[in-house]
Length: 407
Image (cartoon, rainbow, N blue to C red; front, side, top):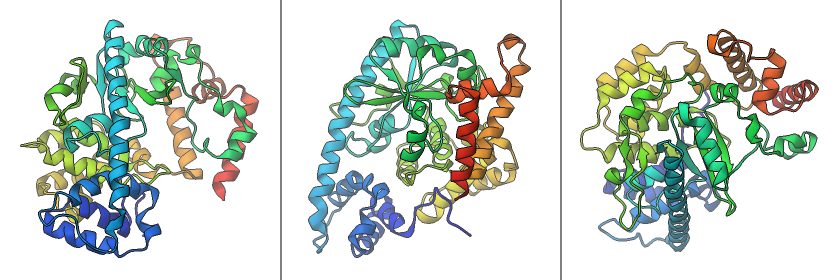
């Protein structure tokens, strides 16, 4: 059986164990990892853990290991310093955005990278990230988007699976066009859970109006918003100025988001989820496992939650109550959300899963009394949501993707 896409390979697993296990076992894992070929140790997914590795190795009571491979330590340290500088800039942007959205009448949640660095990792230099992940209430999506654009953040192109292939971009240049503000319709807000933005300095942010993929019903996130906490309250990183208007998720909600996000296919191996999850659980005095199980059931995410927790228990010595794993396993079925989360791939089946989701949303929205007369035919609907300029281009793109994904 193939290794699940979210599961680290043996080399990555040794690196994660060096970063996360108790010292004696971590030293042993580090020694084994150090003997592996440099090319295997330095794969892109592993490089995201180098800041944490440098920090951990230098925290061992025996000091840094003096082996033939620790001459790479300056590279790891430089990765930590570079991450710290970039995350300071991201935090400054987050503080500014929080104030701008407050004036627009919307609260702001930070999720994943930055709040995890401040709380779970306890240091802005230890958790690299590509962008800011922002969440606003679904009812404030439009005004928040407009406030972000007015502050100088430009919408990115509409995301399409496979659109980062140069040959596809050359064949369909519209893929690279920013989504116009006028194209953020009520339909788009009810199908997608967020959209990316870029600032003049190159910084990027994802603005989400729903927290979980494929769960885009008005009000669905209200229980999570009710549990949100001020980021200042959770911060364990010194010398970090945090706006009092910045919120983040309760750790239980955050863990489920980490596991659900990690279980979705990504071109870059998502091994960093292991460190995120382990350090988040360790940062909480008494993790509320009963509420976690209840939330996973409500969100129809027991399959990814259970599978990834089993891995953490088996490979990262993470103590997960047996009753939690048993309840998650018993609740797992053939639910659509579970299937989309665990099986989405960049092949024909993955494209089919996405089309089925869009078809289901189209049917659901056509039945919504509040949207009567606003939902176009299926082809026009797909063009609008996917950012494709015409039905002819939709067919051209779809047929090309089918052929490309078959290979």
